[in-house]
Image (cartoon, rainbow, N blue to C red; front, side, top):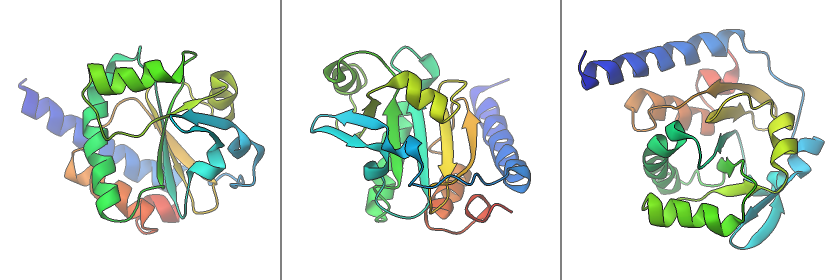
Length: 185
């Protein structure tokens, strides 16, 4: 099987998963007022709470780690996705968090020096165990969809094709407050 066929199958399966998941996934009663959103994040400018990292509306929360091979593969496409979100005025609704117990400078160096990601924004969980437990992160990478109040709509374990048009259309639709993920049906 060639790489294009494998990629097409992965995109199709991810799209199918999203459609089915949106139909059956219950909306959590959590909100941005929930204690888990008071967990701290670190970046080059210092610390802030997870709730402060989000600026408005529905959101996507993504967890990754430098030791995760699938994370390393998908990060360049995520940088392009983040650029597209900024171009559409949707920045602040896509928050990426490294779950690693290392100095933040090491994460930043990994992104810039090893992967060449100069524009990519990633926070680090100050308490990675508490953050992972609060959001029930069972795999790396892990992507979580939040409604406009911070309620967890559901999550997708594993890497995604962030450049795939179907994925971008679905995810951007969610961030704009339309589409199956945002409505939960």
